[in-house]
Structure formats: C-alpha cells, structure tokens
Amino acid sequence: MSESYFAKLANEILDASEKLTNRFEEGLNILLGELDSSKTSGSGDTAPPQPEATDNEFEGWDDTEGMDDPSPLAGIAESVMGDIMASQKGPETFTEQLDAFRHAITWSEPFILSVLAFQIVMFMLTLYVGRRDATLAPRVTMLVLIGVVVRSAEYINVWAAREWRSFATQNYFDQQGIFISIFLCAPLLLDSFIMLVMFLREAADLLIQVKRSEMKKKSKDAKAAERRSKKDQ
View 1 (cartoon, rainbow, N blue to C red):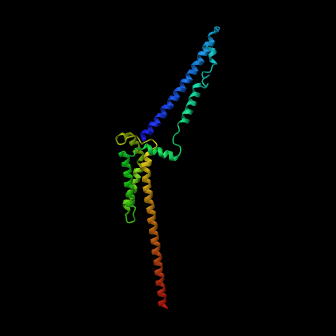
View 2 (cartoon, helix red, strand yellow):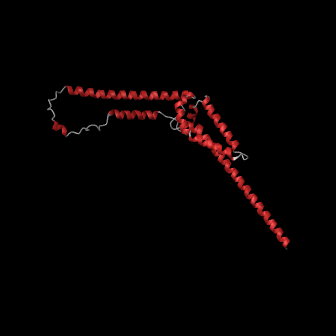
C-alpha cells in the first residue's frame, strides 16, 4: 500500500512539472513573438545617426534604472505555481491524515513488528512493576529507563535516518521525528503516566489506611479514658 501511495505522489509531481514546463514554453513564445514584431516594425524606418554619448552624459544616469520593472515571466511563474498548489490536494482532516500515515507504513516488515513487540513488553513490565506488592527499586528503574529512551529519541532518529537501509524497507525517520514520536516516545510516556496513576492510587490507599488507624486509636483511647473515669468514681 505504501508503494501505491508514493507512486501516486510521484505521478502528481510529474504532472505538476509538465504543467510548469508548458506554461514556461508559452511565456517564451509570447516574448519571442513580441521581439519579432518590434524588429519588423522598426526595420522599415531608418533611424538617423545618433551622436555618441560622452562621459558627462553617463554621469547623471542611474545604474539601477529599469531594474525594478517586473518581468513577465515572474507573473507567469506565480500563476503556474498557484495552479499547481491548488491542484495538489493532500489529506486535510485528521482522519485522512491518519489513514494516509497508516497506509504509508509497511506493517509486515520485521522492523515495525520489533518496535510493536518492544512496546508490548514495556507495557507488560509497567503493569508488573506497578502492582501494590512490588518494591520501589523496579519502579524507579523502569521510570529511569523510559526517561533515558525518550531523552535519546532525537539522537536515535538522526542515526536511524542515516542507517535505515540496514534494518527497514523505507526511510521512516524525517527531521521532525514524527515516526519516532508516535511509535517510540508516545507509548513510553503513556507507560510512565500509568505508573504515576498507580503511585497516586497506592498513596491514596495508604493515606486512607493511616487515617483509619488513627481513628481507631483515638476511639480506643477514648474508651480507655472512659473506663478509668468510671473506676475512679
């Protein structure tokens, strides 16, 4: 599917270049026609000899005179580019962009499957170390590992963009890092968020237990004081 997507994009680029070439040729033909008409109209009249200009006459001339006149080719180029940009309609809505991104990925290649397997393993480890009976050491280790990988994502993207031919069928790694952000950083950040929610839930449960024990202790102390007061009476 990715090959058809890129082939369609290449065909659109070729069509756009052909349109640009045709418009450029039309502009050249117009200019050449104007030059031929000016030559034929000026060939019938013999111009009188003009006196040679002296150096004093050139002193008052501005070297930049006529440089600001707009070229007719500039207008033609602008109109051609406007037509090309108007005809090149890409995905506009979020659903269309997501569908285009999904079709651009070769989901059956080993590299993509390895990344998905890595994310599944990290998610299972997150659930395992986040359970209530787990100690603090594996949780901290998991968070540090996620932080190191996410922090190194930029360097990983640069290296992968240079060495992608050795492990992938196409270059997924652009300068913006869209692929590595979606497939690597976003799931790991989700795992860290899940661990944070587990921490907060466990802390809330511990706080409830502490409050309950305090209330039980206060009630016991009150009952003991009441008994002592009855004995004194």
